[in-house]
Length: 185
Image 1: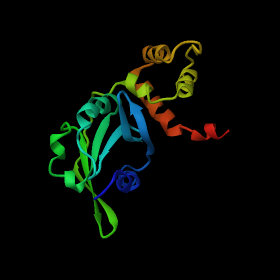
Image 2: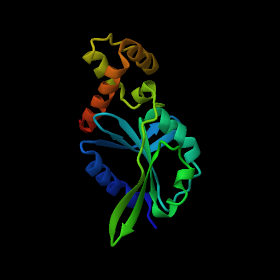
Image 3: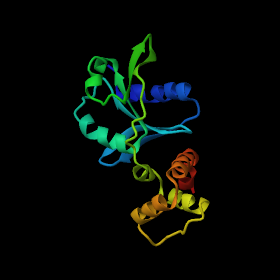
Image 4: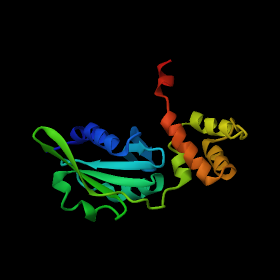
């Protein structure tokens, strides 16, 4: 029986070998849900929900709308015991990848590729950024700082001030550059 911790690191290795240059974030809050893995490529933001053999689909119905709002592509990574019924629990645009332990080595099989669904929202993706990262976007684009205003105000300001294509690229760039060493000081 595979558990989340059996799948997670190996899944990241698999995804990195498949997509090339990527950046991973784990356990990010997205609306009322928590994304197991957020994968950022140079073109898009992916959400990956893991349902190990020990998990149920109970929360997935509530998670799907949050994933669709935050991510350009979504995938369900499952333990092989879920392979027969996984398609019943996620929309057709979600990818499905099965994980199985074969000869003490984790093996992944892509049942279905994720398809872009056009439901993701830039406003939601801005929520993935730290406040200092929002400020970096403001600075890069010579926008007013509004340092005394609420986060929601700043997000709306950025959304109105920038073309969507430029903002999307910069959100991805900022996530790629995210530096956790600022907390080491």
